[in-house]
Length: 445
Image (cartoon, rainbow, N blue to C red; front, side, top):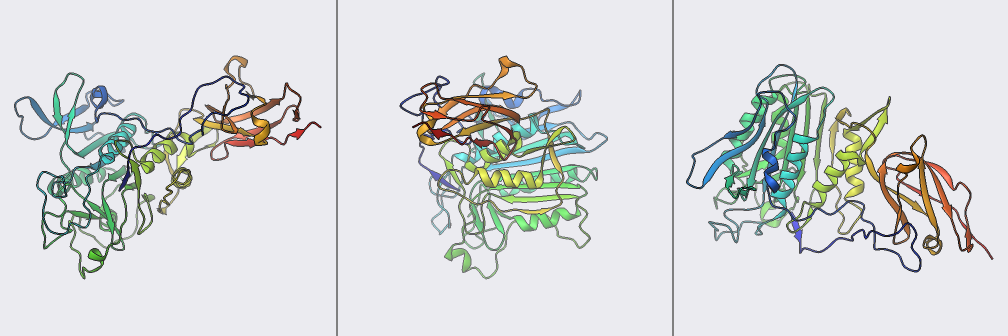
């Protein structure tokens, strides 16, 4: 992952419905993630929506004075019926890289410590735990490994999440595969954020990467091997999200044979997965970007897409499908420099997430930039109450509001009389991904 020095993204400044003479700053397509502690207000321990009697946190490892070693795990235990099982890994602290607790002197290919991955991984894990609604599978487990591992809760107590070392990830994968294999309609989710390389397949670098000079990749995961090994797992729905760079370096290219961490045996057999999606943050040789101490560009785009930017409606139900998710993430990661192009390998196009109703999305109304500052713009939802009409604000040259996706009548008036617009200006279905409408205005001479 390539972390930028922290800079402020364009912000939305509240204003009146009509602005003259000057525009507000650029409206961001997605909101910037604000700095946060790894476990704000101990919300990961807040009881999630799960079956009665489910265990939220399972102790793992020895207790130490002043600290409690735990594995943060949403666990509804083994119950009848299909469930969602997620394995989430965020590696920001690397033990053997420069600045780590045990740096080495040999060439480690990558060198920097990272700040975004644990924040990004936790944000994704919280979304899965609290928001994900699969049409077939209920909540199951969310297993999280983070580095740095220590988090501070509201009561001041320090807690430790299991560190994603090679040995710990091997154990976590064994737990995850066992859970996923318990029902043919289970959902297997895998998420990784951290450093990455590419030798024809994405290589995911774990916390103790570069521990051996003679086996530089023995603490790295070959993604293709993991995905192929999961063919033997009975989970019919499998999704892999990789938030890392895919650098191809001279040192890596010089290795005739790269031995990575052997997570799973790869067995022959037919493809039985009904929906398989692998979505790395970038193509081979590319970089994934993040602002320091913030959720990464890719993960923020992924969360925005799942929350509604990838949603479509069918038979009155709003849902996110595999292909819709990729299209939304692709668009969102290319809206601000430096752009990155996510990759995708998909087999099937089934529903991953159901929404309760129309998602709140950023709506935009455009016209001649010279006229935008002189206009009064309104939106009226068909069948919606008048007191719930979206309030638009001018951002640069676009009138914007965050409102439920749907069909709106667009009104545009020019009190000063310098321009004219049709009345009503038009009717537009503001549905992802088409969330903007352009009004043709004329100047009054």
